[in-house]
Amino acid sequence: MLVLALDSSCKQQSITLFDTEIDKTLSSFQAEQKSSQLMPALVQAFEGAGIKPQELELIACSVGPGS
Image 1 (cartoon, one colour):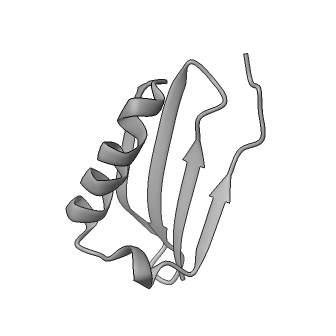
Image 2 (cartoon, rainbow, N blue to C red):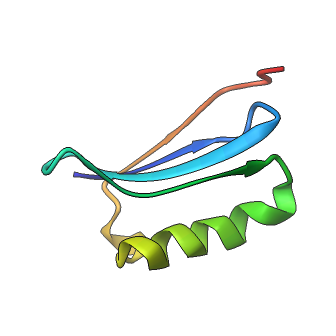
């Protein structure tokens, strides 16, 4: 199962693409929390993993605020 995990509730945001079938992180990105960086980071994560957004089976996100 391909999972996209997002966390933007703290000072740093993180984006992770994970494949549960092979128990492997395909792409991970962490940066200072700025909403303007979220979409470019998502594009970078998908391109780095070599997958398309349509292939996702689950999206997980945090609920904040964190700090």
